[in-house]
Length: 397
Image 1 (tube, rainbow, N blue to C red):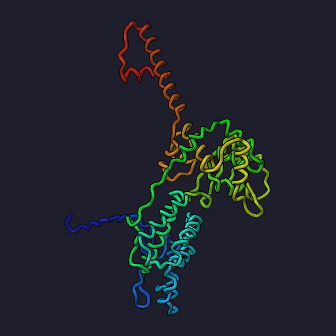
Image 2 (cartoon, rainbow, N blue to C red):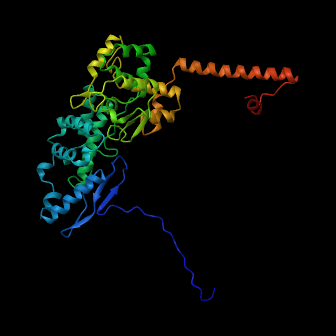
Image 3 (cartoon, helix red, strand yellow):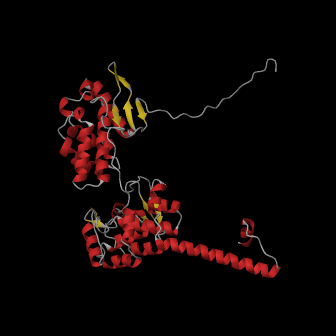
């Protein structure tokens, strides 16, 4: 090999380039994932909270650059004392582009109205864990469900983390283990089972519903779709030739597109609806937003208790459909149809009743009787006894 040149080619793995002047901070210890700016403007290093999404962070970064060019950088990155109250800061945060794109935007507005009753005029730096614990206790005593109170706490935590990242407060006083979330009871499925609703009850509910509400109920029971997904359906989402409907990213709670096959009954339901708009269930130029009153009227006519405390609400139709799905197909397929982001969510609907368990035991009995019948027949034909082993069972089956 004397005098020979050896060329060695090394292929390096492709590295994902970080967004320029932005640093992504992953979620950890209860703190949500977010972006920070990492940029020098007017000889000043600016490291500030930029948003919870890349889009929001880019917008904020652009504002920083414009402010530096116009000589207003200090005004932008140093909030005035008047904006240090929870109410003002939270309002500005929820009005930002990134927050408006969040899946929980509407829910956050509701939570903010509740939080403002207590914290609106309190400076962010004066909020203490005991104040938050007292607030949560008072909400529970007022009859609010723990899940609702936890959503309000979650928004408060997020607002304070953002304020800490912006340098308005030193740290989040209620983050991580400062104020624990309340224990939540996920027993809604069990409560529905306790009502002992039969297949006949569901058919009667459909028959008793007003013509405008009947197909909404049918679609809920045939697909397990959420009310918002059903009511916001457009005809363009329904492919009759391909026999499937598509739930778009904008309509899906999980923000993931999914498709549901059009079974025979579901196909007939959609075919029977008159097309009067781009929406399947139109209300003027938009779509129907609420059917609570008509649903309750159908329940009363069908002699089914309604209301969260003693009966069912519309969302319970999703629970009923889901519990029927997991009895008929595997959990993974049911999870895809229901649009769950995690299969553990689908497992909540696996609640076999005594009848289900009895049917399973009977099925095992039928299997064993059938196996014994085959063994006896072989013994009669061969004149010898067969040992009961796993290998024999495989041969017999």
